[in-house]
Every structure is written in structure tokens, then in C-alpha cells.
Length: 294
Image 1 (cartoon, helix red, strand yellow):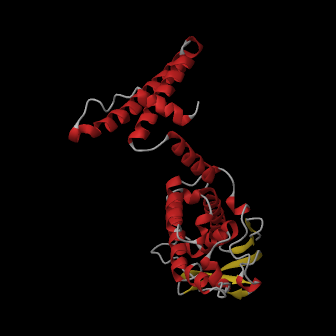
Image 2 (cartoon, rainbow, N blue to C red):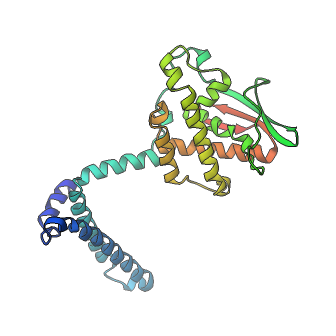
Image 3 (cartoon, rainbow, N blue to C red):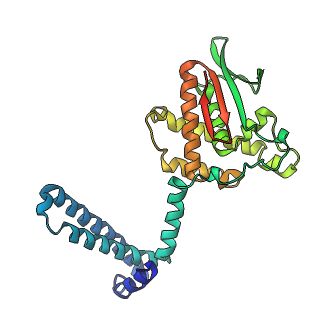
């Protein structure tokens, strides 16, 4: 049955808003919300009986069908009270879940710098060497490309050592999986200067600050989750926050799933660098693969 046709039919039998007038007219929303909560409770009770009684609970399937139908009725009615159609809700949900678990958009679109000269493109394959130096009693991480230092040596900038000096692993994860990293572009001198607007808005200071903010944010998140060891998925609220932070940048075209892969890849490399006190990181942007080679 068509979702909107079901919604229209459900509304014919809706009397949740017929008992309230004036300022109390919005109580119908509460009635519908409580109806959903109540039906969820009865559905849970039906499943509890099934767990307890097993095959002897002969009406299990019929009761589940009925409770799910009641839930759908309340959802249809509540959606209308918010001015929404079931079909629009279903479409939006499928777009969200597809972006979270479905197609890898990073494999479907050309790199952001595909139409620029080679010297303004992120290298499609490269290796970055991380090493440590002890300076005035503090461990500093130094990164090199083709045997030449790039960027500044970094400490953890913290009261205790937590390895943040290796956070460039996150930027490399973004560059490799998403094809996006204003920070890596700056370090490699690969900014797209031939296009003033792109150079300023996509590769400039504000974009760099946003990316550094994301790196700090996912670092704090990972610190609270054992550096994402044995974690299979990034909290969806984290992904939504990251997407919100980048919604005005070109990388907004990537979906939640792409970001999750980039974050997980960055954390994997970070853990290895921290454990080994450095190493060589190999990045393949075409294959979206980042690995430690030593």
C-alpha cells in the first residue's frame, strides 16, 4: 500500500484533536506521542511473552503485526500534525541511511582538484615519515616528505603525554579517504592558487582552522573510547557534528559513511605511530588506502 494513501486513510479515523479547543488544541500532539510510547510498550511485552513462552505463544505473530500497525497509525497521524507526509519522511530516512551505510561517495566523484595542474593537486600516492626528537625534555614529532621536513615539529601541547603530536595522522586520513585536507595542502604547498576563490575559501585559513577543530574533536572523542580500538562504528552524533562543521566547504559532498572511514583510518594510523614512536605512512588516494609500512 502507498504510504501517503495509508496516511490519508489513517487521518479519517483520527479523533485525537477533536476534544481540545483554543490554547489546548496542541494536546493532540501529546496524545499521539503517548500513543506511540504506549504501543512500543505493548510491542515489547509481546516479545517478552515470546521469550518466556516460546512456540506455545501461538498469537505472537498476530500480536506483533497488530502492534506494528498501531505504531504506523500513530506515526502517520503525528506526521500530519507536524505537516509532514509519510513518503517524505521515508525518502529522507533512506537518504540518511544510505549516506551512513550505503554507497561510498568518495568512489563516485572525481577528486576536488582533478581539473588543476599537477603542482596544485594532492599527490595521488606518497609516503610521510614520522620521527621523534627529544627537545628540552619534551617529545616532538617531525614529519618528512621525500626526506624533507614539512610543517613544524609538534609536542602534545598538554600537561601529560597523550600522543597528540601524531595528530597529523587524522589529516592524512582525511586526505586519503576524502581527497580533502586544507592542512595537508598547506604542508605540501599544493594550494590551488590558480583560482583565487578556491585558494581563499577552500584552502585558506578558515578551512584549515575547521579541519584542525575536527581533528581535535575526534581526538577527544577517541580518547573517551579507548582510541577506537575494537570499535566498528563512529557515534552518529559525532558524524553529524563533523558534517555540520564542514557544510559550507567542498567536502560537504561526502556522506557520513565516507567520514566514518576517514576517521577510523586516521585513528588506526595514529595508534600505530604512537605505539612505535613514529614510522612511515603510505597514502594511496586513488585506492583510498592508508597503511603503515614500517
